[in-house]
Image 1 (tube, rainbow, N blue to C red):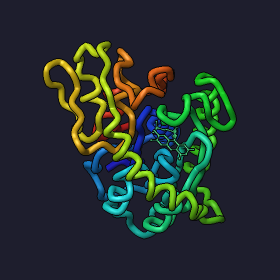
Image 2 (cartoon, helix red, strand yellow):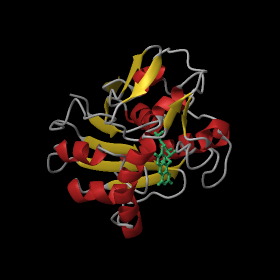
Image 3 (tube, rainbow, N blue to C red):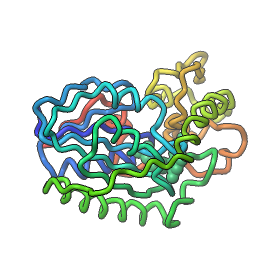
Image 4 (cartoon, rainbow, N blue to C red):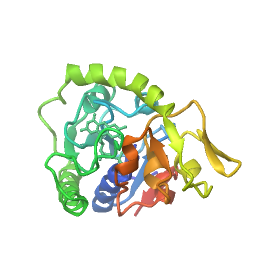
Length: 260
Ligand SMILES: Cc1cc2nc3c(=O)[nH]c(=O)nc-3n(C[C@H](O)[C@H](O)[C@H](O)COP(=O)(O)O)c2cc1C
């Protein structure tokens, strides 16, 4: 078993890039993906166990809480959490801390993947994709240094009650938004959207994607579509797509990645 295990949720790749950068600095790290239920939940022999994920609708992305609950962490194992968001960290770290008390936690902002709500450059501070990536890499190096030395954050992650409320409402909003997904005639039936979907909620029939009922609102199908043929209502038609430049779709959709 690897010395370090990082459980990672990532939609556009920002969090997987952060997890990879932390893993490279630590060495001997397995990144277990949490886009779907993780393939591994036992961390018995690991020295450090971390959770790297994005803030979605003020809290944990849909399904991540169940994955975190399933992970078993032995007493004495060093634990850490890193959340990425566009503007505010939300209640996700607090939720994880309630299950696995976190020795160390941190947050970072990056480009926004919530394309039906905002253009991707609308983040805090407002930065270009290139500048945001540079800043995120700098932060990853700092977090990794702290995690390597097993530093501890004195304060508990903030509860953020308002974000907790937002997070509850968000799941319903995701379900409503899922009904507004449309495919334009730019679609070439390549199937990349189906590959990008963490829930196998998309299948190609008659040369176009058909959406099922199990959408978690990650928007990977929209962001990775090379034809920009998928939209939520009309607003996304005018918005530029965003995916992290250092993460491939193959990495994002893998079950786990080992970094030596
Ligand atoms: C569906 C969705 C909801 C989001 N909700 C929030 C939010 O409530 N607050 C925030 O600051 N950022 C929010 N974001 C922005 C992401 O947290 C941010 O883009 C993050 O870097 C994405 O990382 P990932 O691509 O690795 O998942 C949201 C993004 C998506 C796709």
